Length: 76
Image 1 (cartoon, rainbow, N blue to C red):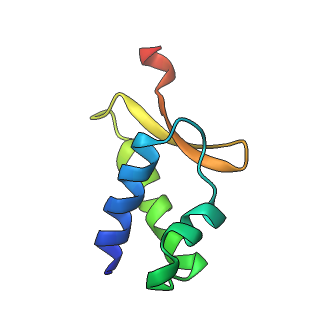
Image 2 (image 1 turned 45 degrees about the vertical axis):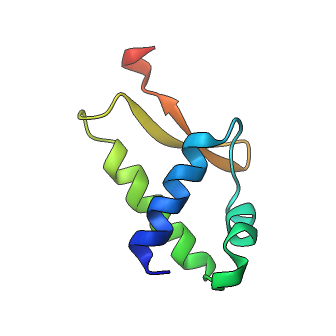
């Protein structure tokens, strides 16, 4: 799976998750693809940057040992 594929898959997982998802859990999910921890971090950083813009009403935030999408404070 190329980086874009990993990134969009992570995005889907985080969107559907009801609690923060850790990097270790993402590594387990993608274990058959044998991604590096750095690949997962790069994808998360890409998503974080994408959703920091004013174009979106939510953002990616690190919380409770994982990552999750949350509503931006100005939209709460």
